[in-house]
Image (tube, rainbow over all chains, first blue to last red; front, side):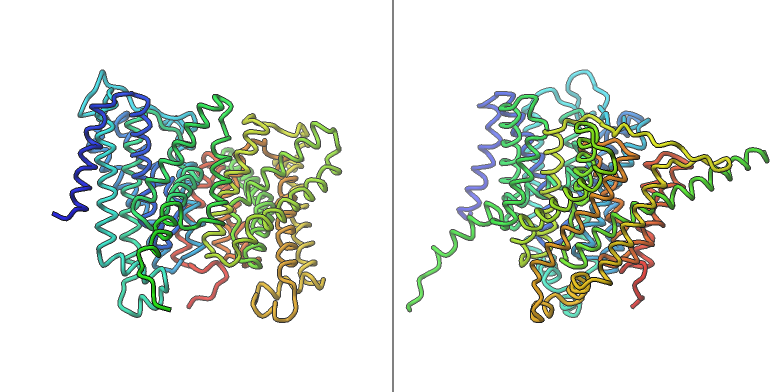
Length: 325
Length: 293
């Protein structure tokens, strides 16, 4: 066994053991939020790192959350079936929007604007179908009495912590699998030069679509889990342009080119939001986003590789042997 | 049955004309965004938020300081133009050599800043100007003066920009830059100054749109989200940087929204416009007026 594997296993074991040692519900709540959002940010970075900047992930997340909740409330479909259906819906949406984009070479600004419109439209649909979704007032999945596995509703934070931990690890695993696959090389070639990649035999449309659908499926899962955990969703918290930008912000702050970058971003953004919330109380409305926005601009100007990415880069030259002059 | 159809036709005609009137303002927004993109090669994600700030500017000038509308409007246009220039100097200029996506995301950060600034400074209440313009009855159809005025002013603004771009030296230089930015700096043109002028002009167009939209809509910090996505769709459908394409696309979208809103809620009009947009991407991926390869 390689030493790195041993570290991984020890760290995972410690993370699993944590809630049984430290049971403070508020701390566990923050941890669950960090883990779920880390997973969402990781899923954004999976395509963001290849230059596929999407501002439509708020839309995918909204579909994941709302489809799961609507199926449960109106048709009594268990989230165990509802979540895969919601993910399928988000995947389908990704194909419908992604295919023409990739097939007809809609890249760069165009792609960002199209996906931006997508998250705006999902928000509009949720608001327009207010008879079913509660519109901008938000929506609550029907409560069961106590914890129920079938309804995926648990009262204790420990269960949720373990679920979120599992999902977060799954996200890192998917990142790792993609990082070691041929797709990564194909996508890197595409992000450098699409024509050259196509000439070298890369199926540009298929590769891009694959990454986008994986990313959309993961984001929908994150949305559904967030809905099941919080038991309240509103268009502002799980869909729309603000959520998309929040994902971009967190991922960029942490660093989109390293697997733990989005997690670092989630830790920073959520702790920041909580600190502001506690510090300012109810006056905090707006302040957290103001700080987010200023930081996002500053990071893009001064630290585009993110905190973790810049750290990793800063550490590298030290390992390099000094060349004789 | 026949009576029902008659009424229906009147409503249909009214919706069509209202669509044209809406199209004027949308075309104005698209023009501003296209101008920035065509010249500086940057997309201002926060464009609709500039409009929102302008609407607040109008609200405070008219309501709090008691200025008449016609005096407040030029002040607002100047304010938003200054904001556009500041946006360029503070955010875009340091990023000009960075990958284009970084500039776009930085303006996304500005979107957050403007939205939350409005939330913090003005609260989340809906506010309106308190000016109620009369309604023009034409046959059985009703049109609000606010929409007619907006349409006229939007057309006026667009003509003014067109004349500026074609008849003045600075305008010609701006058009030249949009064709080849590297050559122009070799020709001794101060690109930094022209970028600044273009940003201020884009801001001024957003300010004009704000003066017009504030007559029809209530102001709140998230009002930008109502026009933002649709403006981006218009610009992409028309071809980013393509002024005429954006102009045509604005009217197509306005008709879809207006007619969609006639049969159902206004939100469904937006959804329909998006569906139309997806279909159009298959048919004309590079924009309405692009030649097929």
